[in-house]
Length: 472
Image (cartoon, rainbow, N blue to C red; front, side, top):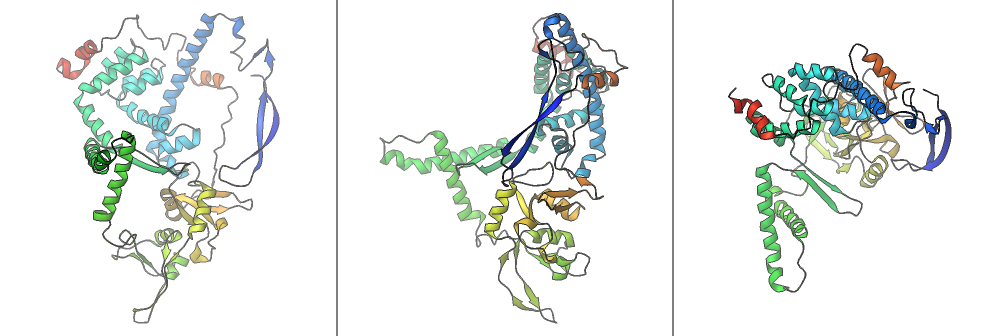
């Protein structure tokens, strides 16, 4: 490949974490021109000098090479996941590690991990994928339903279908597959979620997925609340424009929340009912190796580092005990991180600072613990999510602030964990693929389906292929 000559451009940019503006260096790559067209590789010359047929064959052949490489990639991901290699970087899962390390969308990364785990259970499909005879799109669909009893017939069918037809077949297959239905129910239960967050206007956005039964209850509750709120309004103000259904349900949800808090969920003093109390000796907070008490209100033991983590961002009450163990003095409750400082911390960090995370739900972490003499100042604080706050305190990860003000995280073995992973040095990706796939016969027809153009009869395909339809 012809070398590219970089030239620099400089502009002022606002730091993504609210820090002062600083110069942003941009590398602009200037590629030599050949025949008036940019030359991206040795094999990719001017389109006008080649026939579309030859150009199309090159695309098809290179696609086959990419599928073979993808099969090899999934083998590596599966082994990496099985050995929990992602935990070394403090990631919560293999999917999260992939998202951070190679820049893949989190959902797409999760799908790669799922397919990688499923492939060993369907060897014929895995082998066809490794030979470049199946695309990743087909493999992704097939691994949702294929079993040891059905993999062969599904493989044969998929080689005679387009990727879109394979997707249709799999959707129909799942509708009649009771085992898949049970698995789908379990996945649906696992996928339940509810997210509430605030946008730039100060309005709250509510998004979620509820199980059918929970959704039915919510729908009925919303209907009852809307009737209660707007029944009188319709009688008293018949000429006013009525609120839309969405507006009525928004008001109804607010009413449900108020009723829940005022009646059943919070009969005690606000905030006190859900308070978790931890008793920790001052010596233990200052030095985890010191002997002393560290326990919850009910007497359950906590490790010293767990106590230090909880004390990083909590209310603090100092109690003094006499020689006989009785409490002699109780100080006023104070916040470890004052509200104004917390607002500044949230504004600066905008989420978890652990490399590759960025979760918006965070806790304040004292880089040098306040019990060890560390100040509660913005420069000594960092925002960490619950998972990574635990990683720093209990799992051996370390964080410190460098002289330039940036944070530096280290693995338990002392190696630096970069905020942005280094890019691999790939000189000629296409040539590298061909070298890696040297033992596999690949050409422009490897991925071509044996399809004659006829439409897919999904009902007939299920009747002649599905075990429940053919009796085994």
